[in-house]
Length: 159
Image 1 (cartoon, rainbow, N blue to C red):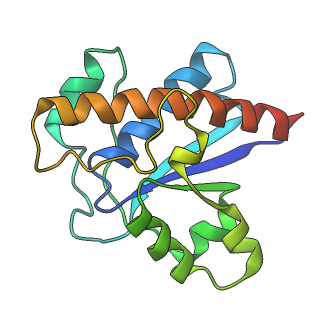
Image 2: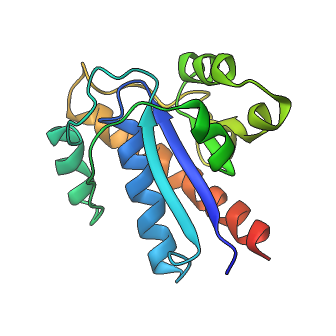
């Protein structure tokens, strides 16, 4: 059975990208597409490698019945060959991913996450790490918005 692979990428892989992974995973489960999607997350830096998602993000997501898990890892060049769609949370992540890409086919997999948002006009998913609780809520609002369109893209790609 054909699958579609999606990778969420932020800087440290402890706030935005694991939350994106969890939001899309929940939406996919709700639509019975979870068996056909492979969803993961990574960071552009390895500083937090092995760490679980930020506790504040876990708490904010849990209030929405979204459960984050896993451990942070750094994105690799191989990820750009493995995943059908690589989603950058902000312009710095986008720049870092594009500089990691070695071919046009790799660059073609990379998109800005906010390109998928239709209810919000944000151009980037803000990093909530140094802010208050409201920052995590804003991130989750954006992720829920964009992930609905990402799920549609995946459904179309799967046929």
